[in-house]
Length: 406
Image (cartoon, rainbow, N blue to C red; front, side, top):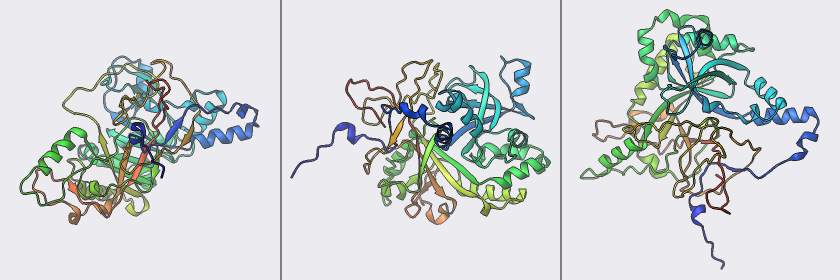
């Protein structure tokens, strides 16, 4: 019987799709315009999760005109500009025209850089598609003003369809703001038009390890230990694919799952109460808990980045010495037309992305009875999660002759 040898690189293969940068199709330019245009449109139909912040303040080093452009009522729009890098906006004029038609809502905004603490900014344009893109509100200030602006800038007058947020970010604003502001037609229309709502629960590798240590080392140990070794890691890459079931063997992770320090049942109740107050029907939208885990230590300062262009995912593939993305230039990113293929899957393959759980998974019956002060540990064995997988870019390998791909 022939033996099957698994290389070290294969053992560390990611669950994320593999991007092969070697494929080209020079005959594309010979196709009729109608076919080329359909190809551009098809290539654009990908879901993105864009993190946005609505702030009261504005940068100091912008002109009065720029200040007026980025202000929506009482709030200003800030976005990490690396999320908005799109290849089709830079291929040629034909692709750019198709991309701007697809991303039909275009809002002036403050473009920041990762790790810059908003000290290095420029004014740019945020272009998105309400039906495909999810706006993840990391900071919130005067939502009604922003909702009104989106409807005004949308040629179809639809407004937002998909929203992600942690209610802790907006509860204080709602309590301090004038409640009559949330009865304006634009706000009511947006809330009633939401198709998908994601309640964000998050933690990081530092807090996860602390909780695992406290939970697993207690004596006597009469419960299943926390393993949580296959939690997908968050990335700043916005584009993702959604698998309706995580294909990996994550039973042990689900039996004792730490989802951060937020009181998720309370957040769900608060959201439903707000929808009732706003006259929206929760059954008309698909609501889920979006769990993300960052590979970071919040006690350490964020590394500043001076790179332009697309988000540089400076992490390494687990158990290898290879960076996820190695640019040919920090100022002028290389653009490739790519062909995708599915990487070989292993039951223990790491993944970059996020989990999603139904709201009804978070009942008291599924909560661990552990006595920690932060007991947000759940037994979700009966609620296998959906898995979002980011489209991670890759670059040339450090080792000559090594095959590159994720």
